[in-house]
Image (cartoon, rainbow, N blue to C red; front, side, top):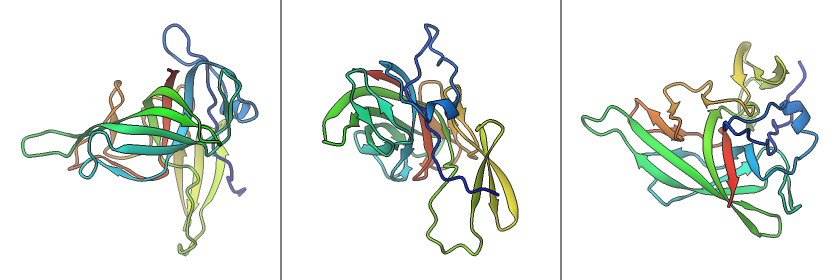
Length: 209
């Protein structure tokens, strides 16, 4: 099986008046970056977040999973930084039904350090289809695209699992147990806290400020 080596790229996709992203295959968007002032793109969380340990205002760092071009012509490559902050963090307390965590993204960081202000709200989340391993696992992981790049097959120690891959029409939490995402971008969990692992993929609805 062929190793899946590339990240799925969701470059700016123009939003329709109804608020849904125009249809666009991830394979096509991985080749070109489109110049659109509003739309969606996918980021990867750099550090894990836990609603029990973070607080409102704490910085959140992610990185682009594919290159984009801003309306002013600025090109940002894959792995460019995307910064945000925690706007809500609650661990489940006695009598509370759920824990919650909300993050909003505020800026894109160009290679030279210049920042472009954005308002980015999370539309969907899914596991990383190609996590980095430290080589300590007895069996290596193998990843491949299936079903038009909507899922990835993960072969690990003779087990095969299906991992969803985000596209511009994805909504909610895909492939992660005990984690939900409300339409307003707030993660919730029935557990004691909301945990977002490092490397988790997030689809953002973005408006340039």
